[in-house]
Image: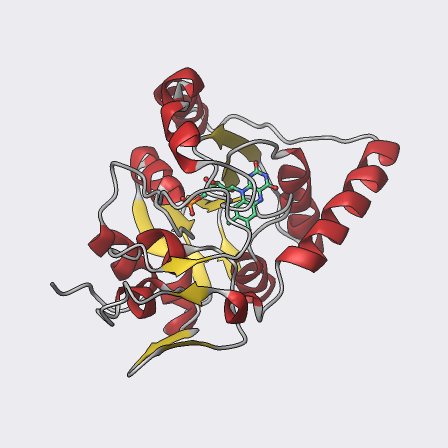
Length: 257
Ligand SMILES: Cc1cc2nc3c(=O)[nH]c(=O)nc-3n(C[C@H](O)[C@H](O)[C@H](O)COP(=O)(O)O)c2cc1C
């Protein structure tokens, strides 16, 4: 089994590790220009962004040639995922790949403009992440079939809301509005955890125009020096079972202390 994953703060990597199989980071596959994936089972694990899939995941899958008998999606999210599972199905239709199974895991919501991170982290126990993972792992082991159907009315309503939200929030130049404070020691972590090579650290930190709006740079900064103007919290999050070097290995170059 091969698991293709995308992660910024480790939730999706944690889920990918728990599912087992060979883990392949989508940003690394993109950088290596690898798009042929074959195995008896192939899955994608990634976060939900504004009810959609991350842009890099979508673009990778649009180009990829995937050969498998069992294809699945497991999405990680913090509040509401239904449209993303639906979009995953629609994308599979578009690329002519049968989606056998789609599920989602409710975890910490890392969306800083929407949530206070300490409250989110404190809510972990109520979310029974291990219980959700046990169920999904079992389903995948049994090659269970499960996809989401949405009524046409609900589909139109959700598409409208999420597309409008996404257009405003998920803009490729989003990082240009991030604020880097004097706490920055130019350690380069933000550059190394960016899945899109969109951050450069020299005398100052500069952001380009291909931001995935994943907040990997913001959440993983060891100094807490990168901020959004509209963040609800100065507290930062990384999944407790995932290290900074794992994020860096997944998204950029290795993390060296
Ligand atoms: C820009 C952005 C948009 C998001 N939109 C949603 C959303 O629509 N619904 C939701 O439930 N969670 C949303 N989230 C939360 C993430 O999907 C969630 O925290 C995810 O588990 C993070 O995965 P990661 O740790 O692998 O990066 C959003 C996060 C970001 C950064």
